Length: 190
Image 1 (spheres, one colour):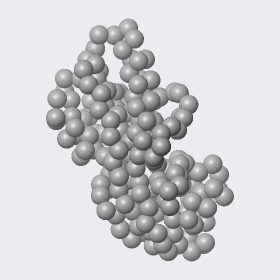
Image 2: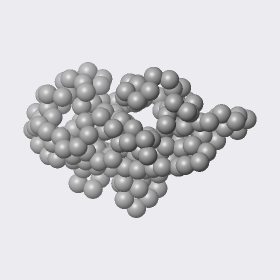
Image 3: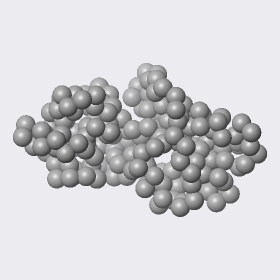
Image 4: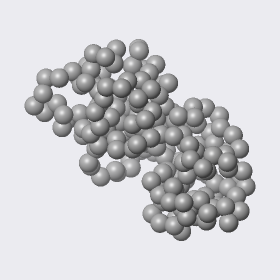
């Protein structure tokens, strides 16, 4: 299983680093450096393709002059509301518009994952449904002023002080944070 590999997380996300620690403590972080280009016909395909691109780039880099048995884990997370993909906000106004649009509604958080070794390439998309309470403008601006939304898809972190606005989730909580560790662990077992 995982102990037979040199494990590499192709992400600089501190949340993914923490979550991967639930599977293994022995891994290296080597973030992908390429430009994120969205391609695919559905949000599921798009986020899965982003994860594959990250894993492929890092795998090529680390195995170029190495015979190590390497496992690269690539991941990307998006929020989808009313068929529209919400990535990380560009600025305060963008964060406000995203949060205003999600207020009182149910949306989907999708994390594409790619697990890449010499022998196997597995990719999948994990989907979790999240429902927000209705947010006032004052609550939205207070959250934006905290600085928390700016490195997160959909402009929020469920694990932060924004949790008080989450009415419910259906699916994997860790997927919303950024890495569906249970699904990854089960895929690696297989």
